[in-house]
Length: 178
Image (cartoon, rainbow, N blue to C red; front, side, top):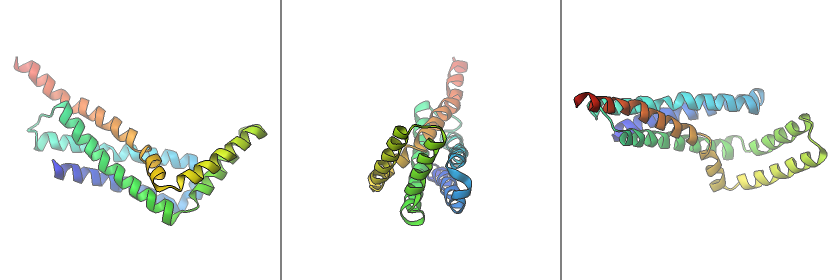
């Protein structure tokens, strides 16, 4: 199980990390909204490795069968490895390669509020919120926690769906055997 989890987790993590690093030079051209679309699309593609990893486990280790619990645990372990890769890459980017990210994102958020017709009070509140966020985000533990919240829900969803889809064969076999 360890080899399968590591292999598929590292493949997913490499996809997530590579896309972040490849899009970094084009950050200003891509923009924050398109960056989110690219990021979450990449997460979906990377977390397909959860399905393939659990399927590989089922076919090679489980002899063609896997329980929901085992499929979920394999999927969650693959997700955990990929997420650690994602967070590690983001920490490198945030603290070493793009230390001005917080300032750029804050400016974007305030500008977005202005162009959406926000009142002066709302713009002031958004500016204050972004200033507080930038300060809070400088703490590596807070930074890590927020960064974990980006890919983790996607990976957990993939692990759940995969566990349901691939453990279904076992339930069907049990019904047919009786």
